[in-house]
Length: 483
Image (cartoon, rainbow, N blue to C red; front, side, top):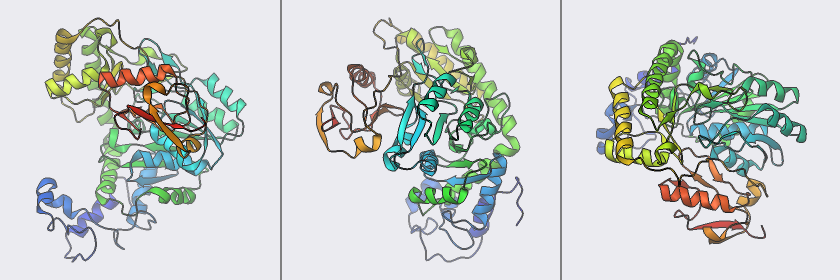
């Protein structure tokens, strides 16, 4: 069947399937919701009837030949990619599949240290060796930036045998590196360019936005459609450019992705792709209008700094995603996580995350003007009630790592446990990260410094949710024996 961008092949097939008189002696066991009335009441009968299993007529995610294949071809067309894969294990699986498709054990990959944990997890699994490029740092905001071209060129010259360069586009805060320049430089040296676009799905469909991975000529991109494209949580796309063996990529995906792909997630990707392709310009335009208004009004409050394109320096901040409402809070004497907690506990407002010095509020076309006003007025009230002297505030979000061992070797090594406060100079055997955003403060194989310990203790004191270590209280940490 010939599909167009107005079609949603998976969604349409499920709707047809729901209206047939098929008797189900297959999984799932709730049998359209009849076997679990409480779940049906919670999610709705139509949702449970759409939670179906792979069949000959509904295709199979691990080896699609009909409707899923058609939906993936439509996605590739929409994103101007050579191939697209439906990912139901989140963008985490897409990032890991990119890395594992291009790097084997012992291969080097150049990447910024402020990557999501999924990238370093992939190195633990496949045994690739990281070559970290320290991102720029804005000392006023205390945040990591993008990668400078000179730093990437230096890494390439020192490690000409590296297989790939990985780039964030954008970072959690909305900052973009010179992606087109990086692609050109990497390709000149025979390296692939992999792009983590967890926060950049809208780049493909809006105007006045940073360049997308596929438009920049990147080889692969992991795109969180659920973050800014309107699909269900955990659903993403993996995109491939020219020269990528998509058959091999599917084999890599199938090493870790579930064999029981959720049709609810796939249908949501199908519908979201259609919506963004047909209406993306209007959706992004409305998002920009709301975000720009919120930024202007928050800056008028004083104390807060909602930053934007004025930061651009054409290097470590090559471009900025203006849909991101990233706000620095240090002038108020309050950590971003403290603002986040106050908004939730006292004002019933949930934002994406708060860290040591900033918070991020995700704005989309699904927001309404009165909700933006509620956020602004709540921030004004927090300033009036809680602001204080900032003398004791930490002012950084990034610490240059001292990499002593590969992530895989450290993670799988024999370990011993010591109190965190006694761990200085030892090599970490596990992750420590604030989640969200999920950027490791410490990764396996990195030497622990007093600065790192102080940062972790400060983050704990401010209420950051720290994940990764075996000891969930983070009183103790696992260290590499003989490290």
